[in-house]
Image (cartoon, rainbow, N blue to C red):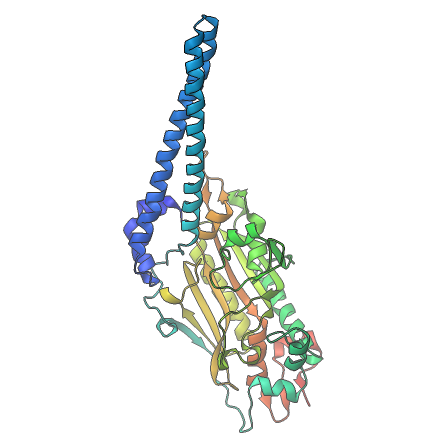
Length: 425
């Protein structure tokens, strides 16, 4: 969440940033927040004053009794009781104000970086790089949802029977291909200096709050009934939460972790051709890279992470483009995001396979993730994460782009993981 000091010291900057996100009443929202904080301070001051007076009166009671002034002592007792009752009321008011201020902060998104483009629609995202050639397919070329049936490598009907829509079964060489892609991405991440972690797939409410998935504004989290626990929507959540309530040293930085997990998303409100087949699932496999970095170095780290994702797609020989997301398309917690899209020739459309984001201090403030500064002055760190890669859509593009009348050709870099170079009928 945003720091109050950031809003106070750079009020117009914050307003302009939220306007870039399409929040037209940003000024009123921030003024209401600051008013809540002002009321909190005033209430705190009143409570402190009343408690100080009650303590003073309590000390006077003993002295009055010792001096034989019992009537004054009884009067002082009544005054003390009234003061304590008032302090209790003020304490409740203070708790209410602190809660309201916290909820208000939770509902304010991050301020976009100055390099984030203006705009409110996906069409306003800025293409900053394109790589590779769009493959030319034979006349009988198909989309992956038909090819997977032809080659019997993924079964959506069986998934629907056992679990419901959006939960496919990967079979035979299809299952091996998923595993190969995951191992390839993990090995590449390790070579780039990332430390592998296999985290839990379930997190508690505190973890969801700390990385910004909660409060769940888009209805994407799967909540576990009768428990304050959730299935993870991405490995970012458990891995970043390793550092919740942590004070790091500067020589600990940068921290670079990678994790391969299943991810679970309700995908509420999704429908149409864009979600067909592997394009959008409720359960999917993803390799996630996470960095904790010094504020001075986080944007160079963002470039490094983008370069890493680019190298994966180049090695897989996947045509792709990189988008600098506009303010209106930016995720709630991100200060800047670059989306990677691969071209799926069977569908003749672009599919997002990675989002690489810098959250600056937004998550760190919720996490209470700090670094020891000079003297006693500690500071918030920057958190970053990226998909490297999301397996299903990469798999969809591999199947579609490498289809021929002879079969589905396997990208060369994956052959050592598989032991075969083509999938045939």
